[in-house]
Amino acid sequence: MSETLSAAQVEHVARLSRLKLSEDDITRYGRQLSSILEYVAQLQEVDVGSKAPMSHPLPLHSVLRDDIVEPSLPIDAVLKNAPSKVGAFFTVPKVLDPSAGGG
Image (cartoon, rainbow, N blue to C red; front, top):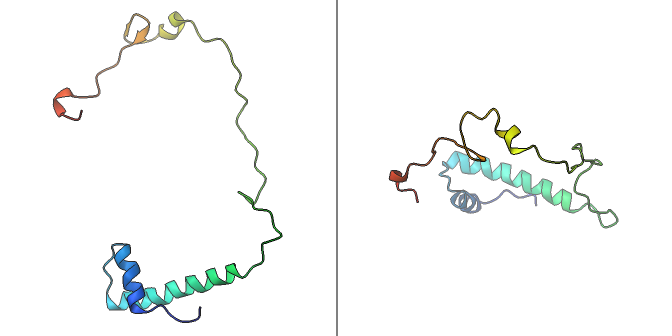
């Protein structure tokens, strides 16, 4: 694709993107978009039929530790330093205002 996009095509893309462009912008973006499309056309010419698809160019491995099931702390130990508690639960300030009408 060696030709520049028409002004109508650039205006159409701008309209889809909800952009208002000046005449200078339309000319400039027409050249830039055409250049991008030419590069994509070059990429489409590359024969990749013999290559296996990959999700990443480098081999990745998880850096996270394995999950190990361990016994939980006793409730008394968990709540020992809590500033406020009711029974076996933490108490926290309300973060929703019922009068705000958000429900």
